[in-house]
Length: 213
Image (cartoon, rainbow, N blue to C red; front, side):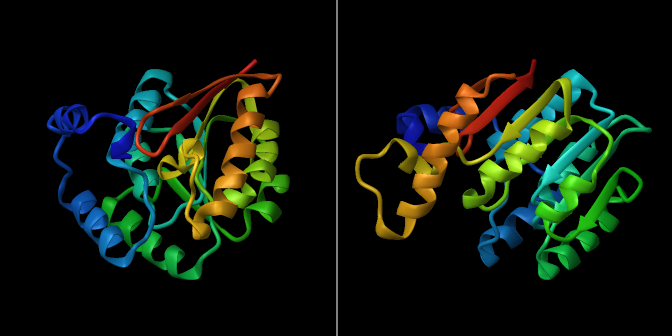
């Protein structure tokens, strides 16, 4: 999301990026080569800080992909804490399982296979932290389910709310018009949610942060 900052500012901030370990570096390179969308390094560091500050016992991720964010979250969870992560794509599920096993985090990360629209209504216990990073046209419905599952005082984080800068752009390429429309609509809902103290931060591709009242 380089265009949020002046190039010099972005370069300066990037100079402080912590080097990824071998597994994360492999995942980052794989995602880049295979065009698998994963959380930006800025977003990953941000959510890691939230985990460290709030010590969530139960976390939920909607959109596992290859488990990049799941691994970064789970590494900072306490021993008896758990992260449930939902993924529909069979290809992503196979990759995620492999990376989770290699990270030795099978006890903390519970991969739930299937459609989030079918799974989330069946979940009963509340969560301390929910991270939403799925198809943009599904954000509104998934967010509604997330708010039901989020406990009072819990944190919800949503990725891609600046959508490569197109959310604030006057001109949007044709292939991004529909997704940009959904993001703009969702941003209004997210900020005006009555039972949520929320904001949008220029971190990575735009991170929405909310705390349930």
